[in-house]
Length: 154
Figure (cartoon, rainbow, N blue to C red):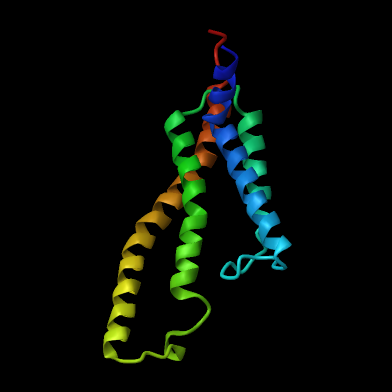
């Protein structure tokens, strides 16, 4: 089947990362066409993220002939999907405004804001740990692939 080779590429770590880079490049193009060079709550220009993803996809492409662990591949790709979500949720929750400058209509609004902050804190910490571990796993996987050698022909 001709289509199976394409789908194998799509679901490979390099292919998925390349598709993520393409998606974020489209986000960048749409965002800059509206007159912005960043997404408002993200402090850096969004062009860096697709470039980083392209570099990672190239690393995956160049090291695909080495014996690496699939689990670490999938963890790393999942972390690449989670990272922008984590950054956006952190930035929208905390932003650049100190807590003292918020104006609350009443005490109930303040308690609701504090409850949302607690929920976000509970979700952000494990996600941050997972993303950090997956990035370490990526480096370990590349090094281990070089040490373990090339894949066999079969």
